[in-house]
Length: 264
Image (cartoon, helix red, strand yellow):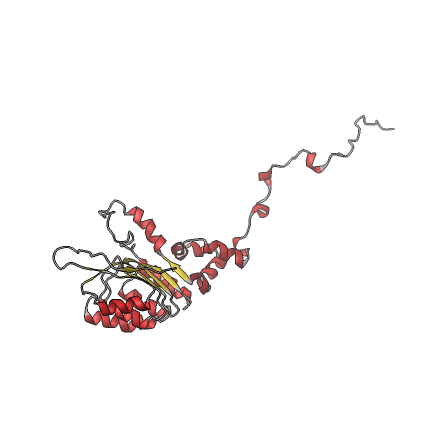
């Protein structure tokens, strides 16, 4: 006859689960429970996340987070329908704040594009696959030729750096033939700084019938804009801001440009 234990069997707890004492810490869960796969996110969620990032950062490496991010950044042309690389220059502007730049000048603060912008802009255009409708950023002669070939649907062009358009007669003819004639859908053209000749203005008015905004008020021209060209520009374009006349001696003396604003 064995000895009977005096220990009583503890009855099961009748308290609700929310009142039971936790015996496990929240940080003791295995990593397989807390870890989430970024690559498994739905495509619309990935689209929302990537679209909030600066496009220059996507090109530099944000699109290489995983395979799904890379495919979205490379194989989705609609993500590059509106290309804006001006934010990238704003970052470098703070880095170069110690340089000798006059803050009170009338030129755009982004007149000095960062190094390597050509490769970044060309990569963005290639990924658009011909669906680019607006571009905002620095340009030069070679990139404008590339832009005219790669973006036949371009409607808005905002140049954020100094650009001299048609400095000689030959350059002006090349610009008209290889750039202006290939952008018939252009509706907005903004030039921040640089030289533009009256022949280039006439070509823009003739070959861009949908143009509604021409802002060249911060630019200058060496040739005087006659009344015939002025009337033609103001009759075809709703909002026109013409460049001022540059002085012949010494520095550039800007005359106040005539502006015809859109009336609502």
